[in-house]
Length: 242
Image 1 (cartoon, rainbow, N blue to C red):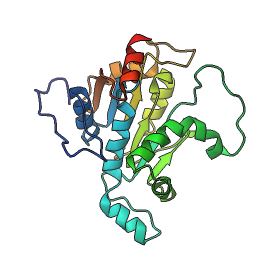
Image 2 (cartoon, rainbow, N blue to C red; image 1 turned 90 degrees about the vertical axis):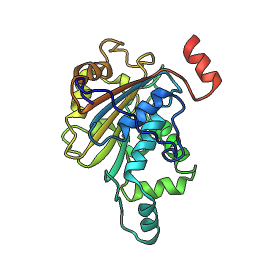
Image 3 (tube, rainbow, N blue to C red; image 1 turned 60 degrees about the vertical axis):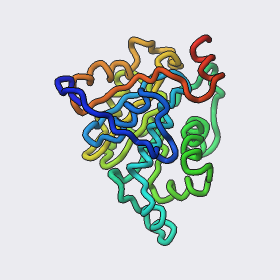
């Protein structure tokens, strides 16, 4: 909450969110912010494997999709969402690591598949690694994986929005994204400032750091730096030593 508020007890989600439980205190802080409806902008920064994207998606699913929603969708063709938010929107910048592979054939959805594959991996993991379940959510419009390219001009209300790999965004791009938020929308920025692939920005000029610094004094904003890797021992060692 706001910087003038006293210390508050962090909510303990011992049962987990979609099978995801906090493995360290920073992850517990992150889940508390992600599940707090009064905090409308959350930034999670951490090394590879620290769980920032998985925690954000799990919290988003928890607040968008409920067991009642799943049962209703199985019986009806309509889209349902009786959670706090009506849909989960996930996106990331189109920024290659190393040399670009060039032109990708197909329509917009086909072109976006390689960029959104990491997000799709997390969604499949949380929905039981069942592609049909994920496709059902997407067909009903409850889960959307969007290209940031077309976000300008939109007004997105009642949504839980996750922008992954936000360290590759410029200040202007972050401002454009945040100003798209309509009533009842929450935005989560995740990223690792040590893995910037955008050659035009660095650790001090990235829009992610800019947003954290400029918004930290407002009580609708929250930030957590995840310090411990939880993906695997190999990923943790590599993140620290390479």
